[in-house]
Image (tube, rainbow, N blue to C red):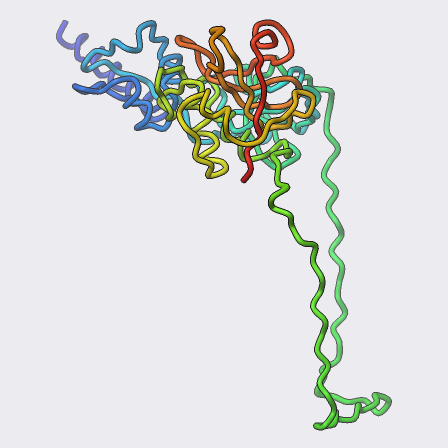
Length: 325
């Protein structure tokens, strides 16, 4: 009986050791919360709770073990070269084949990608920008082998005779006169940049890059950090991180900043405002383009995308502001 127990304990230890070699495990210590643990491992509290299927993440027990979701890039050997296309808008490209892994970027419907491997319902892809990551296999269509990359032939360069050997036919240039005036090259004219006309119109602008990194971060009243955001705390954090612009922690106060923008002229990075409680400005988000905006939506919710031109947010929309750099 003792032998059987020892054998079972040994097998259990081997299993735990094998698991720990592939995943990070954290044991909850006194005073730790889901927020502090998530901040330590640089993941969102929501990703940590989802990865461990926690129904009450606010009630951790001392000694409880948590598996930390992957944050580093995971690469699989290239086993194929197929053409793939996104089937949905805002398809998440993650650093590892897991829904709780950090999001690298997001692509829209129809975006081309090179599929290089498939693993457990996930596809490893390479985007035209050169970035590599993982997408859910069900949200892409694979049409067939991609053409092989074209490699330019190496051109052989003929060696020129040494400059120290002069041939009879080579003319000798006369030495320049010491009294001849020196000619200075005219500087090339460069186009001046009007920084005051700067607007965030690039799809890969810093504002939307930073904003999309925090998709899924939980709503926290008064929050203005990756541990939790409220609506104005989210816009305040993103604009400070991306543009160095300091905003007040209030949707109503932020509405007084920048310049007004009509709804028909909205561009990526503009702030959009709403009167959700019927008593003036009470909510703010960041316009993403294509009729959508990103915001920390409500208590109990998280950072997410919404449609601006339909439903509730169409009825409560008040206006927009564009901030200068």
